Length: 163
Image 1 (cartoon, rainbow, N blue to C red):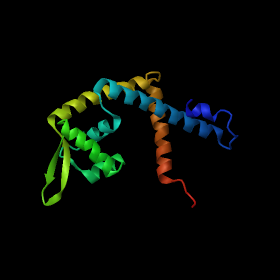
Image 2: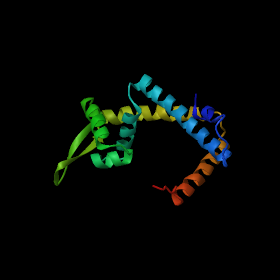
Image 3: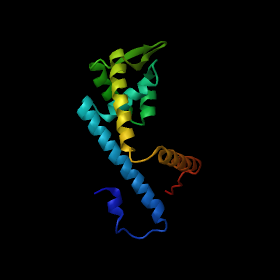
Image 4: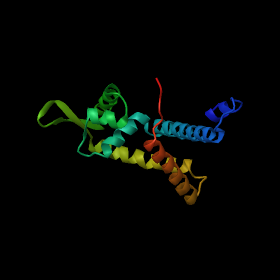
């Protein structure tokens, strides 16, 4: 049962449409992510975190320090280290010493890793395009614009918490 279905029968709310929209967005995100995860596993024998790490490295051909990589991925450095170790062992990424800092190193894609990532990225794009195939170009543009307004408002007015 998805999140939307769980809401049915819940206590009434002051803002039912906003809540319903949020749950619809979350459900769609989860469904698409589930399909992407399955596709990466079945087609490339890899995981979404590995794909995400490689995507970050693809955007920074000179490489990234581990702390920058974990910050960009919003995960702990331990998670990044484990994934990096696997990818190094497979020859898809390499560690390079940082000049002037014997304790630090950068991680970057190898030529083999870049080629594999490019193939995965092309397929990933197709999966995402397919997920939105029921929408026309105008619908996609409108949805993108509207979600941009939500993003901007949320960034300008963060939710206040009381503790």
